[in-house]
Length: 120
Image 1: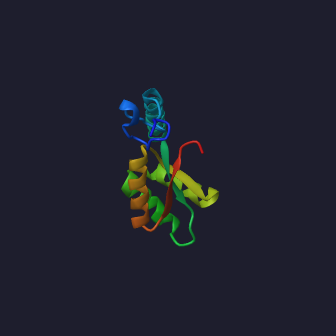
Image 2 (image 1 turned 180 degrees about the vertical axis):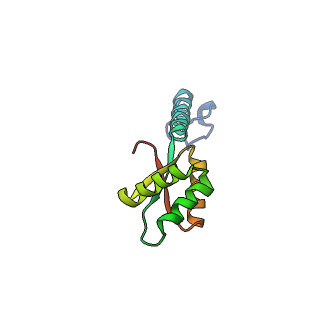
Image 3 (image 1 turned 135 degrees about the vertical axis):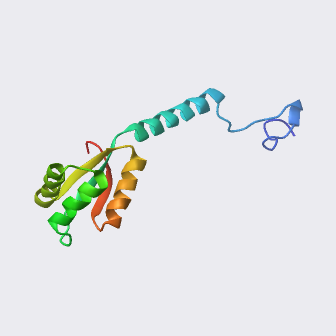
């Protein structure tokens, strides 16, 4: 049996035949690209968006904004009216994990909220 017909990884011809392996530098470059993409994705600001719903009263929504986010009465009222008139309002911006916690809290208060990328 010669090296051309030997099974992959066999020792025919005195050496190990490696078939289908990528050069090391290619793998390192791919790993760096994936790490850069992950860092960019997680560094992107995220938002907590509260959506209008037919269930919650406007004063309740403003109270939730004041209690949970610590907004002033004026800011809570402004955001509540934005939800009411525009159908949605961005109530927080920051790291994705923090925005996910805010969304979970809004759900616990009975509000409809989602996480989104800032600027989209």
